[in-house]
Each structure stands twice: as structure tokens, then as C-alpha cells.
Amino acid sequence: MDLNQKQISIIYGVVILLCFLPFISPVIALFIGLFLSVLGLKYNKITKYTSFSLQASIVLMGFGMNLTQVVSASKTGFVDTAISVILVMGVGLLLTKLLRVDSKTGTLISAGTAICGGSAIAAVSSVLNPKSSQISFSLVVIFILNAIALVIFPIIGHYFNLSQETFGTWAAIAIHDTSSVVGAGAIYGPKALEIATTVKLIRALWIIPLSIVIALAQKDKSNGKIKIPWFIGLFIISIVIAYLFPSGQNMFTDLSWLGKKGMVIALFLIGSSISLKEAKNAGFKSFVLGVLLWLFIGIGSFIALTVNL
Image (cartoon, rainbow, N blue to C red; front, top):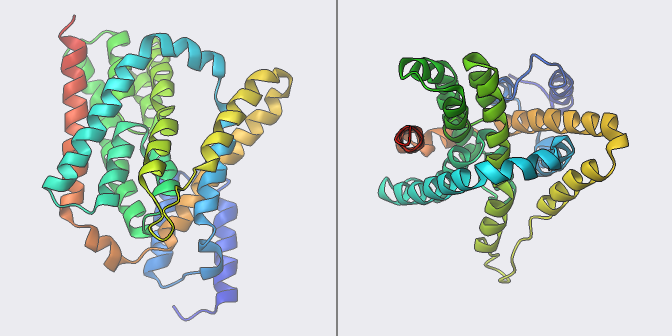
């Protein structure tokens, strides 16, 4: 389409406003951005703020996390989530080499599978500095598998007559995004929902150490300095502040909501800045990597949880 940057900026402004509405999910925002990119409608002035919007959103979402619940849940879910995260990241990096997948794309898909889908990919992207095509393709892979898991996990759980406690733990470990974990738990039962939400909370916190490890591994070749993920420290501080000042709960809820919407906007910007040529370069092998990792954590955690029954 033959539009100037001023006209395109208006379109982008409208879409960003729409991102604050409840029916615009991260997936929809990503594909709206991709659609504009396909049409050739790119607003170059705003896409450079994508990384900052990702980082700021993560910090704001910290205000919505309950420190007491985190500490309580860590007593039961820490070991399970630790094992799953380490195994998935290890297997993911190994498969990345074996399948000859781009290293950054492989790391993003592995992080999204190991921890919490889109949020983990966003956090790791802020440290890893991948191309927009690498981020978007990783998100697409995770979102597709996430949607499939939401549908089939409750069916599998009922078929094998899993208890609500076992199903909740399995869903929290093997399903990517928090929204789908909560959805699957809610479908299965109230106790499954409670367990799934709690264990998922612990799994999500692995974003912090993983981002720090990746930051330490990613050194600037020009001067040998380590990039410090400043937003991770602020993320922790936001969780602590929300705990220390319970009287500000209403404000913290609003800030957390703003962070979630900021993440939606960031995904829109990511989608709008990619090209089909770049996405195609990610290749079929990247999708195979995502599927294999998903099957690994899904089947592996299922066996580990049911063998003790």
C-alpha cells in the first residue's frame, strides 16, 4: 500500500489503542503486526522501542506477583520445575545443534518451552538481542503448540483418570503460557486449577536466573563487557514492593494490568517489524525443534508424575 509515514503512524496509533481492549490477545496483536508488515506498512520510528517495551512490561507485571504465594509454593514445586527447566534447556540446545537450527531461535524456543511461553521469549529476547524474525517465529511455534495443549491435555487427563493434583502439576510443567495452564486447570477442576496456577508461578520465576545466565554468556565482542539485564533486578524489586506495601494493592493491580497490555503492544511491534523472507529463513527445522521439545516435556513429565501413583 502506498501510504506515507504520517498516515502509517495513525494506523499504528489506532492499533496500539486497540491493544488495551480485552479481546486483543498477544497472539492477535502479533498477527495484526505481521499483517501490516505483509502490506508493507512499517512505521520505523516506533519499532526501535520494541526492546524497551518488552523490558518495561516485564517489570510492571512483577507488581502482580504475590511474594508470599511464591515462597509457599516453592516448598513443593521448586524441585519439579527446576528439573524440568534444566532438562528442557539442555535438550533444546542439543537439538538446536543436531537440527542445525539458528542458535538464537533455538534458545528462544527452548526458553519458551522450558518456562512460560511468550513471557520467557520476551524476557530472553531483551538479553539475547535476536532479529525480529527469530522472535516472531519462536512465538508462533509456541502459540500453536500452546493452543493444541489447551484442548488435548484435559482429554488425556480424563482418559488416564489422573487426579486433579497430578493433572494440575502436569499442566503447569508441560504447557507453555500461563493463560493456557490456567485454562486447562479450570477445565479439569477447581483443585487442578489451584495446583496448576501455583506450580506455574514457580516455573515462571525461572525467567530471572535464565536471563542472568544468558546475559553472562552474551558478551559484547567489541569490548568484552557483559550486558547486565537491568530489568530483571527491577522485576524482583517490583515483586518485593508489592509485598511490603499491601495498602497499595489497587495501584499494583493497575500496574500489573498495564504491564500485560504493554506486552501485547510489544508483540504487535515485533510482528510489524518482520518480513516474510526472514520468517521463511527460520525454516521447517525450527518448528520440528519446538514440537520435539514439547513432546519431550509433555511425555517425560507425564511419566515422571504417574509412575509414582
